[in-house]
Length: 380
Image (cartoon, rainbow, N blue to C red; front, side, top):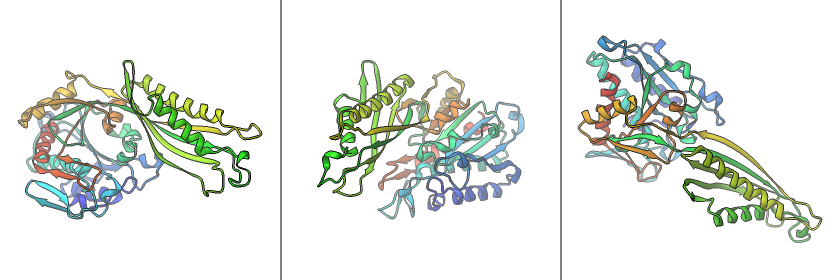
């Protein structure tokens, strides 16, 4: 609950990082074991700090076992700024009905701290551990994308805490491209000589209509291939008496199939370029379209018999929950960790209705996640 009161929008994680470091130091973790990487310097959004990484040696009869990584992300969506958590029974909500709570993903951050505190207070044996609290997850998994892999200590596998039900093992997730589109038209006086202009707004409208008509927007299904695409913010134009000469759009394309994901992006490029080619002014001039495409994250899928999945399943069963395997259509830090060579399972930690003012946290599920994290941290 204390962590949820600390602001930490994407790129503004310095305060919550300091809070976590304070807790680590109180537990006796040496300063040399705690550090930040420079992921924020590689981020298109800038940022105050990089990912917070803690590397610990193994203890007792498990110190020679393969290293394990436990992760969560520190940032919350801006809607959570000013949240005041309030507990009623086993549910925590924001007292202010105009804010989110921030359980996404402060619950995951706290799960890792709780597991670590229990290990230290009870002097429990455990394998070598890397604990990582990522930055800028909410704006495209930026922190995990740019994590300094060399600082992780070569963990054999990872466990990411972010989501609702701790019994759900997310073993796969979709991949995504982000599209930034600039449509350029030709300005003209809309009242005196509109025929001399080429409207970027009209080019945009024609392209969007084409995408919708031909099934390349929203949920997409083409024979055996599936994916999604969505048009997000659209802006442009400055006055009603000027033919709009520029529009800016942001969109995304997702699919578990990398080839089909590229095909979706290709369909978007074609729709906008075709629309620009069709619209001309009275002297035959046309507008143009520019696409800037970013590969947000790659899809991944682990098998039920993979060692990391087996370890997660065993921990969930030990917490007296029924393991449930899921492959999801959203992106997770596990996408990037797996891409970096650390196969990672994501487990829930009590979050509900995230990114909304209805957000809450279920303490029963949170406590189950703490038991699972401790089991995994001990290498059992």
